Amino acid sequence: GNIPPQLGSLNHLWILDLSSNLIEGTIPLPLANLTKLISLDLIFNKIKGPIQPNIVSMKSIQALSLSGNALESPILDSFY
Image 1 (cartoon, rainbow, N blue to C red):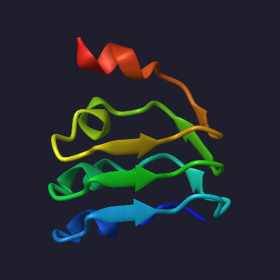
Image 2: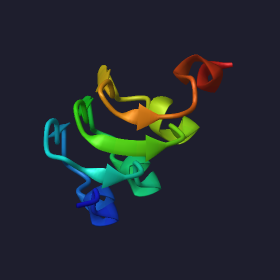
Image 3: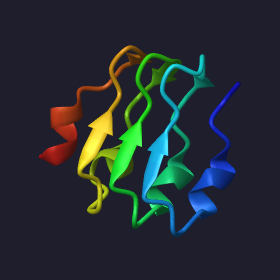
């Protein structure tokens, strides 16, 4: 299945680990609303498409794990 965009409304979420769940689709933009999220782990799924700059530039994120997917855009471009 896909990552439900409704997860973006869980304002007090600190850690989101959805690794190795055969998740498809893209990373929903509402995840950027998780202002307290310190760890986002989406490794080893079937997520595709661009990595949105608002996901990469989340100020609270200390650990972002996206390997093992079919993501398209280079992360470093989001920082410039």
